[in-house]
Length: 130
Ligand SMILES: [Cu+2]
Image 1 (spheres, rainbow, N blue to C red):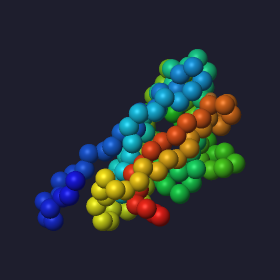
Image 2 (tube, rainbow, N blue to C red):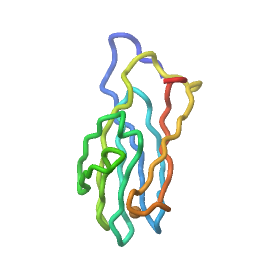
Image 3 (cartoon, protein in one colour):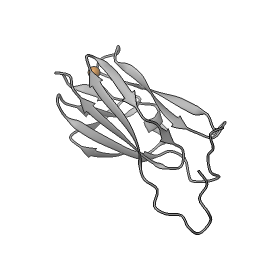
Image 4 (tube, helix red, strand yellow):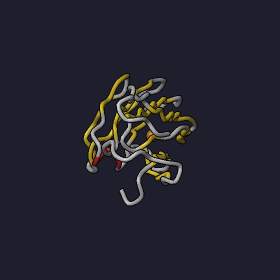
């Protein structure tokens, strides 16, 4: 969608929902490069899970909620105890030319750094080659 110059209003934060259940990630929603995006992570399992993505190496993340941050050997990771919810706020890249339907949906892997079999993907609409 194109915004007319001078009439920009506050952009709503896009939300990606991640539920961890039965030792797997269930992901809905997507983010968009240059716009504030929130990943809402809920742990429905009976064990503590980790949440890591290489995305967090290049993009600063603000944590809210009941999770906590740890420093893993591959950069910042997060921990979420059973029954808890946390929100990770970030903006990938910078606002620039408007994105269109032609922009690709790029996948970013996510995984639990405590259980190697628990992994999934996030989707973010990005500029080609960006
Ligand atoms: Cu786990």
